Length: 261
Image (tube, rainbow, N blue to C red):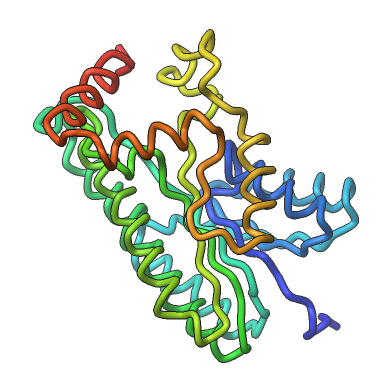
């Protein structure tokens, strides 16, 4: 029989990259997990590995959160299971890179559905459940790109600006409910992505494990905005206080230079 007192951390986008690193960092701290991503096979392997390594309960669900009907079905399953989720980590996301008018509209719509709509709906449903439970925590993953307009990554950067501002607003709204909201704004993260690989000789990119470790530590301290890396924190401040025309120009030049070819 399932222990009704078990509380879970639910992580979206948990099959690779930063989502996987966050799952491992939480499992290392003894957290029971619900892992969510599009593909079942990697989730199953990850669940088995984390259970074996850390002795925690790891559940998983393959679901394309960018599909509203599938998201609705998944949320209904969560409600019917009565599992208590006291930490939601919204890490699932997609990006686009290049001239906006040259992008496939279907991909741009998928980006908006996942990065904005799915994240907001998960916060609404699970935020309400946490408030009824008497508390909980939400960590939304934005990006360093959230702090300035970024030509050549226009839709992606705008979606992350939404996540940043939404999370900060939600933090104030939910204070009296016991639900804490934080937002993670990492800079470039080392991965198999070709765009990031081109920064490999720079000291700027942190590994997913480094970002996850700093994020989990800051989450335990209930930090509102989490920006791993001193240089990234400086860049975020520069984006806020620099001249807007110059910020647009510089961020566009950087994004265009590292566009995949």
